[in-house]
Length: 582
Image (cartoon, rainbow, N blue to C red; front, side, top):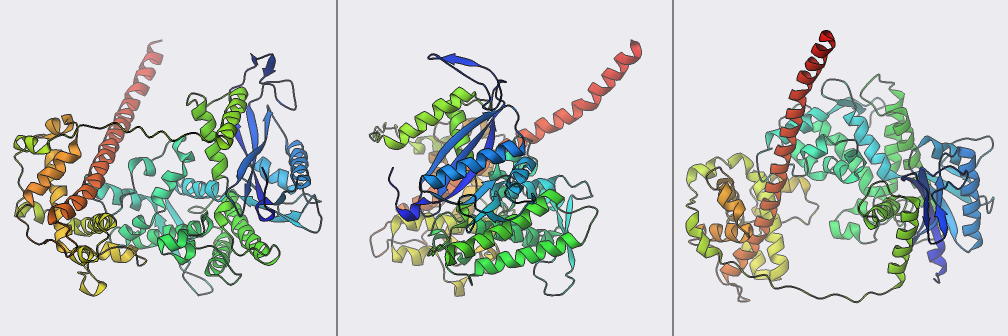
């Protein structure tokens, strides 16, 4: 590969993947031994480079080891950096998780050994070599610290990040509040906090490794839902989540147009040393320093996590200034300073090895070879789309005697903010297909026309891009939720789930109920009311049916957990009885 000069500025990521320990003979060679001993390898350290100003990323070395100490790992890392520099790359940062051996390895770049955000570069003593603890790993650790609290309500006690006083007020973020928020709308199909789930609130040890579950908690919809609830510690919990979410939004920008797409200035590339993002990172460092000085016995981050949080925030701040001033970059994407692509590589290794978690070192080598071939070979596009027979939903309508009355609507009054939010999305989805200004005026309102009570959730989350739906769109989504509630009731559930195309039947049922609605006319561009309403109902059906599956899965998980907990005391009692008898 030939790289332009600006593409040679890279970060070097390192992480370990646990492997199956055994020797393997194939094609005249034996694999499985560790690189530093004759013992079978237990883990493999994988090193990958990622360009800061292009999409290039590549694995540069795989090191199988049984056990390794910080000195050996440091010597190998130093040698690898020097080889990359010799081949024309410019390594400006090392990125790893917060494992103690990685911290100690990096500390050996200074004399005496000391953990720092920046060291003298082994290839050129006048240049800096930064060390960043992976922000993705850090966010999971922060979530885990919250989950592991043993006080009542699993509370974090933190200083008010918005305070300008010398001694900010101490606030409480309660994980119990999140659980109560989830329980309060567990049976609803349209929720104020749609990302909260049983799995996100009670992850297993394996699921704690998934950052997506952490982001279901640190989510803007959760913040908005907490602000609109009356639960204890709701506002302070929302503030804690929002503080961490804002930090995450700044450090997770991987593409130049992300901020423009999401209408969020904090998610735009950093283009100057006076940018809002750098100011926020400075405030975060001050907030963390004051939090550390409080010396609480409980309700705080662990020493390792707090130290890594401060370290990474400071390191990213200084790296940005270095890239803009010394390297002359026009912009900096802080999302390039994480190990996401390396974790993705590990996932590909496992998928290419039969979807096994513990793969062998040979399987890793072979998977890497396949991935490199895929990168250089252009495969032809396979355009084979099978026609799926269309089911006539109208013929099935007679099976479901469903009507929507005033009492059904009254029971949903408290859920109107969530319904309105989803209706705004449905209007947006319809307008993306229609591309019609006349239809836009029929489906969405200007800010001056909005009903604050219904649109409170949208108003608390919008950055200028969310749609405020008109009454007819809200009515369509509300009607669909009521109809689906009845379809999943014991009376119709068996019939409904046995159908091959539930979405078509749901849309047809709702459209039949709304057929008398004359609020929509043919627009000036010729879009018929039937077409517009179909787009709205199709988007609503996708959301509701997806939520139906998630709700059902949550209930099954809760039932399994309760059954296991109920059996546990009986099992213990049985063991004690057998012990007494013996």
